[in-house]
Each structure stands twice: as structure tokens, then as C-alpha cells.
Length: 219
Image (cartoon, rainbow, N blue to C red; front, side, top):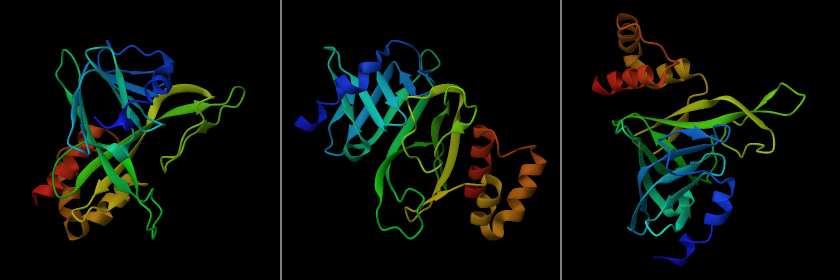
């Protein structure tokens, strides 16, 4: 095992989060955990164990049988999978090179995205906690995926941002989900709109959004 994998554990786990809970979000929606998980590294190594995903830091940690903790940033990971218990539901996160939404930028940073479907148009998601500075009700967050002000009080359900991974590897940010999706759908847009209307779908719920993108992929 490469030596770079071992040193971030104490920093990441200083929040004292238990990994024995079911796949839940804690600490102000900032950490997502699973009791069963797998991390596949870029060098081909595979680690199994309970997982914790730290959203704003973009770090995944895996706990080994001997109690040791290994933590990774996206540069060292191909993908990781977390599994809820007892439902068995799985969550797939891929490390993808992303221009951070800056059009025309040649710099692409390895970044974790949750993959929600499979197909020519792949629906991706990133989630961030809502934050409120004490005495100020303004919610602070970054649509581009920058670090959040973790010293502020976390509140409510996390913000969800959606993206489309195109066949050529480009990641398109869906700033206005409905409008931007139909722009990508091109000459199939009308057909997709008819399908959405017929099946009473909308663009606000993840499972319905998945159905919309999957229908486009089937055309």
C-alpha cells in the first residue's frame, strides 16, 4: 500500500463520528456514512470497510478490520461504493476530472460526484450543507463546489446540485435543471417533455429526474 494513504485519518475523524450507524448524514449534513463500503484506488488496490464521506473536504475514509483508518482525496480514487443496512441500497461515487464549472478553463480537478444512473447522458449529483452565520439568516453555499464555511451553524437539508456527464467526458452544470437539460436534449426535447407530462414527472425530485434522463437515453 502506498504511504500516501495513511496520514489524513486523524484529521478527518477528529469530528468523532461513529461508523457503526446506517448510511446516514450527520454533523450538519456534512458527513455521509455507510456501514459497508468499498474504495477502489487509482493504483488498483481495493479497500473494504465502513465508509465516511466528508462533503466539503471531498475526502472519503475507510475503516479497516484492525481499526486503522485510511483517508483519500479524489486524486487517489477511481470510485467508491457505500451500502446501507438493512436496505442494501448502494451509492456510487466516481472521481472525475472537472473544470469546476469554469467554461474555457484548461484546469480540471479530480472531484467526487455521486453517479445516479448509467447511460450516454450520466446524471451526477453533489450535495452541500446549508449554513447560517449566528445572528444572520443568510444561507451560505457554493454552487461551484468550493469549501463551505464550516465554522458556521449547519441547518436543514443539504443543497443538491446536478450535472450531466456527456459521452466525451465533459461535465455540464445544470444551473437551471429543466432549462439546461432540454438544451442538452436538443431535437429530442419535445419528445421528452411529452413523456414528462404523460407520467406526471418533475425536475425537483432525484428519482424523477433520473427517470427523465433515462428516457432520453432510451431514445
